[in-house]
Image (cartoon, rainbow over all chains, first blue to last red; front, side):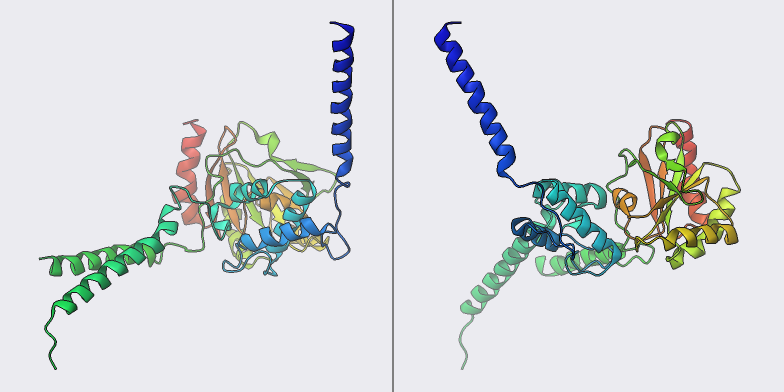
Length: 147
Length: 183
């Protein structure tokens, strides 16, 4: 290795290390919760509110865990906050929930062969209704107008 | 032809749908557990009866066992308790209790202790889930819930609502027999 390439190597290593370090320090240490259990980091709190609205409270099946006062909903909210603070992604949180409670825990389950019927039904109904209206209208337009 | 066939087909489709959907034997609130066929979530919690001891399902590897999640606040659990006592006297498999403290307070442990002393203890061990974390890991949403774990440590069955002798004989015993064979 020439002296020049050695110097370049050293410079590269240094930059990488420094950027890795600055990356580690750029993010403030994991945001904690305030006295009311709210996340002090507003970005995390916003994500929390969106995720909590997306998760069904299974004790009271038509409420989200954001709206429900049930004990389980409170525990699941705690779980979501803790995972957000730990730096988990939204997907990781949803996967955590569906691994335990199944797809039903999500109000809008992702499109998959199992959920295709739910997602497809409205379009199917629209097509069916459209076809019926089309036929009826065409039949009526063929009828003689009797006054 | 279509004029008669189409309404008739729609009628048959509705009958099939209602026969399935309105079947009174089907509990619409009982959800299929995604845990079936998956490794049982591990827990290591303090013993309800002796806080210095730990109850963990790690010690049950290689054995068929039942996990029953209950709480003293749960009315159905009180009804189920007599049934569990009768089942435990058959000594088929160990029944591990998880006492689910929904209020996270210290009171539940005391109440659970008194409950077991007064009514009898069907469990080989009872874990105290003070923060409700084990309940979340097991996907519990309505106590009582009862799980069956096979020798490989996989959950093979889940029953929601109060255990009865009938459910035990029909749903659990055949599965336990199959699991004990290692099948």
